[in-house]
Image (cartoon, rainbow, N blue to C red; front, side):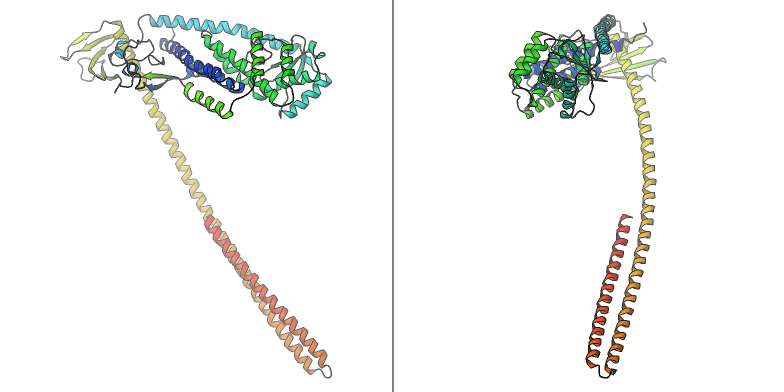
Length: 544
């Protein structure tokens, strides 16, 4: 038929397993929302979003996580009294142990047919679910195309003021539509806010600000993007009542979270905001890419009740609850019997010692059961007895199980070969990176040595300059001393000018002392320059 029966069976198994596991997660979320009435609307929104994400993960996750049965559940831990299922490796509670695992066939003769029928029904349901979504999307696009740009001065002033207050980097377009009765946010890209043209004139400035604040809060939270997860879960699991429950509760919690965020701004009274919700009434049913008023009066009543009882609980408790649900409920799992020491294994290898070419032996090993040996020759299967005699297998379930073992063995060989090739490629890449790192290290070391030599030369040049300055300062000091002595002699030789001579001598001595001090300062500066040059040389050496 051109269709892979194993793939179809795996698809049906994943849908069934994800649907069963969602029972526990939805029950947990519903219990948390019921037993914690003060749980914030934002936390409820996150919990229902995680419940939708669990369905999508269960559909896409290749292999469920195996969990050991608890010791306080003896029947479950021993694997007794548990019904066999067509997909025991996928369903979370389908457990088999010992010979029960061998006796439970992967598929009887009718399983591929039923799998194809179920897959066809699922595909037809998905296509049927797409039709109303496509009609709603086209209606929203037409509504957007027929709208006109908003030129209302008060609305535009409030619009820009709210954008600054909410710190929105990019404001969506604000347009008027004659086809709606309540404000709507269309998107997600590009996002557009539609105002009801007929009601705009009758809305006060406060009501208009509350309505626009609500739509911009949707945009700030990214609700149009996050809403695709519940929408996709409702579409793919259209047959599952809990998928529709999750989508409905998520939409309600999302609107309540936005209501709480608007009131948390401390700009509006809760009574005025509630009257605005009642006045706007109901709107289109929420869908991906659209946020609007409550779809039914029952949802509107629940929003008003949550608005009246808006006393949020501890933020830490909400975060811990969300983290627990995400950690324990998202990944698909199955419970395995705890006392099984070794699962049944099948070893498939070509028989090189057989009587005829093309014969393959299969050896099954299980915990607490003797090994069973089988032989495959073309399309015929045989059981090898303890005496070596061959007995042909005629049971369809056993033949199907042996065929599955052969397929799994071939798949394992292919996966092993692929893994070996990937390991060889990874090793080659690692060696190439190591060689490049070694070359780069050698280049860096050579550059460091050149920098150190350059630093050494700079230090030596600085020391030479410092010595020249010190020598020049000493010569100036000696010259000043000689001039002072000469001036003193001239003063003594001067007749009749003893006082003037003494004054000149005193000035000469002061000049000589000043010259000596300058020489000493020059010497200190030379020594300081020499120390700085030595320090620079050490730093260059260290960097190298």
